Length: 134
Image (cartoon, rainbow, N blue to C red; front, side):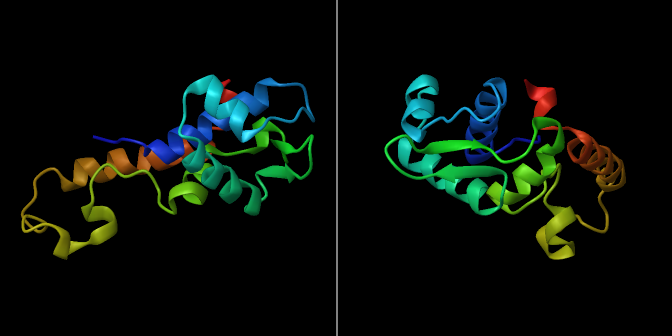
């Protein structure tokens, strides 16, 4: 079954939170960690990744924090997943790992139907924006 990593979940929670604020509002890692009971250190690393990728802006100083660098309707969920985890969400590992990943690879009766599901999933995540999770 498809399952997003905790890192991706935390990143999407943070982006949703920022997207719900008026444009330009700044949020801190501490604020996000406290409000959603997220692990501070891990969240800080996720936000740094998103900032390096240009998804959010990092503002230094006493009144520093993070804000969205782009409008929520421009931020694709698939891109966020790839930035945080460096992978696409997968239904079955054989699509990324190939024949060596499973002894049933060539005799598998569900690989093709799962492939169809995977293609549809890719399309869904490629189209879905942060705006849609607000």
